[in-house]
Length: 491
Image 1 (cartoon, rainbow, N blue to C red):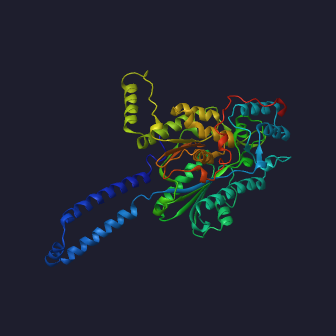
Image 2 (cartoon, rainbow, N blue to C red):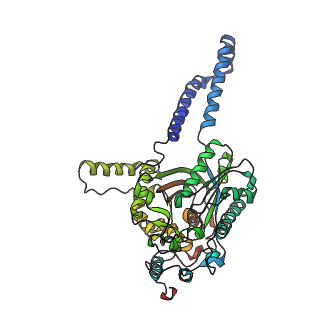
Image 3 (cartoon, rainbow, N blue to C red):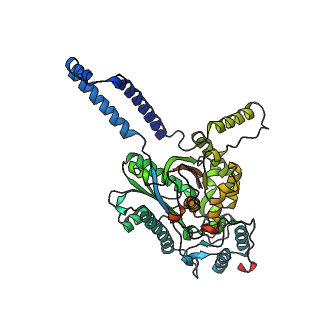
């Protein structure tokens, strides 16, 4: 399995650029070596006895190389702040109420209602998650107007909050990247944001659609690449999903799962490549890594939007989804590991591989201890089964999984923005300290597994933070039952 950027020409360019930088540094050291004991008398001697043309050419060559180096070196990307949208209390909806809403639509058979009830009982989702107001209406509204209303509330609210928290004005934004998978109206979400916040006319705007729950990492990576070529620029990244459009009112069992997990949520992230912003930023972006398994038919087809026999549109999930996700994760971490793991762990991995290849297959593959590489883990809260499998695959403890499990319980699956609710949880708990490393992992249709690594630039003090957890963080963590029975009267 190969990550999508393994043979990317852009990687070749980066390699050549690093080689050029090293060559320049070596050349620069050779030139400066004689000047270590250079004096004013030496300068007078050179001017009197050396060819002025040679001196001029050498000086301009040195200036040119210095300019080339400083213009092409990698620009650091900082996270100034981020905001996670918290819907209004009137959108809070328990699982039993959701089941009553489903029953009230008259669209589901008894078997479909029973199946959704069974999934909800062991989903790991709590009773204080949020749904769109129009989904609680009688009858349920699923039109474009209702879908636009939902997403506008989420993304506009998140953007207003992140601008307020960072002290920035909308006119300061030079790059805008928005991701929303299932609902992409015309004009685009990036155009709606530009209109609502009166962004400047030269803003570089992008809307990413159909890329699933891992699109948030992709959006950050796109912004990072743009920040490498546009100096002293601010980038706004917005991640959201649309429950109104995503909900399925039919009886194809493969499409019913999304009804039980997805809830309202979204996040806005403000990035900068201004060197001076290092001192006021929360995090520095260390790595982004994208793995795409779309070349494999089974991976490509495991998450698909399609119509059922009655023409109802929904997202169909195949039975081999967990196996596909596992393979994508292996490909992603095998590429990321050399950049983040200590040498002691890499040596154990290599030893395990050699033993299995040349001696006996009975030797168990060594699972690297990623707790030596990262202090915090933010794994996409796709569902209890997903988190259970990831915990086993990465050999993580309950403390490392806590932000993801609590996010799933409190906010449900908010798609690509769930990674930011998880980071906000760790901040609200006062766990983020200067120098800590954070690993965010997203999964999505295609099939994709994407990672990004952040380094904390300061201690995050929860008392001065504003995020959706702050007024209730003392209630967490909660003990999660394996099975939470719902009243049979709900169906």
